[in-house]
Length: 214
Image (cartoon, rainbow, N blue to C red; front, top):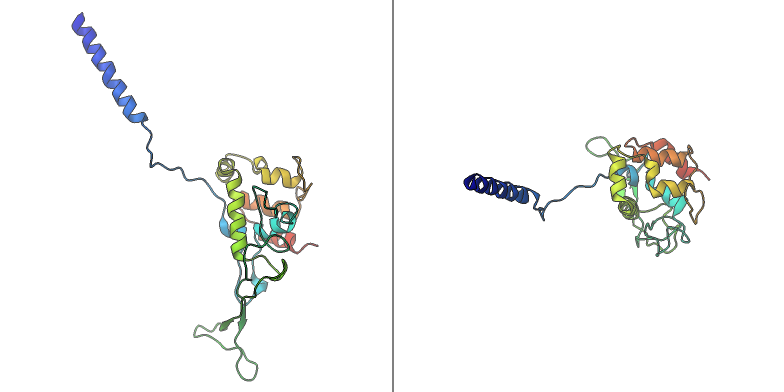
């Protein structure tokens, strides 16, 4: 009887040791947070041919929410940089023009495409100096948006949660008290642009319409 109890006790201790070893946290373990597409936020810019640029979510948020008295203010936990608001960059993005040859023709590269000449990057002296937000500003805005609620953002990206759970959506739509009021109307181009990006289906046409709207 005593031997049986001793064996049972030793077995329990062994199992407890295994369970303890399995439950020891790994200090080096990391869980990668899901993030929506960065290119869809920053947009795509085609050197030398701005007509082929693809508007991103960032420019939409800068236009609707990036004023100095709102998300351009230093005290905001989601601060936006960009055109007509707080500027992050000191110089505009580099501009390109097509190199010309005598007679007004376009100088071509070996592959037949136009040779692009890099122009000077103007120093930013007024908020609207560049006529657009810089790439560096939009990248900073992307980090600000995805860092606001990383857990919910991960669930939205993984399609485990509706985008409407995110504060940036709720407050933008006016569903939650917001100093700036309703900046995005459900179903309008800005709304389609933002939700399409969050759902992994960027809607560049809606983003462009939202950026170019008066």
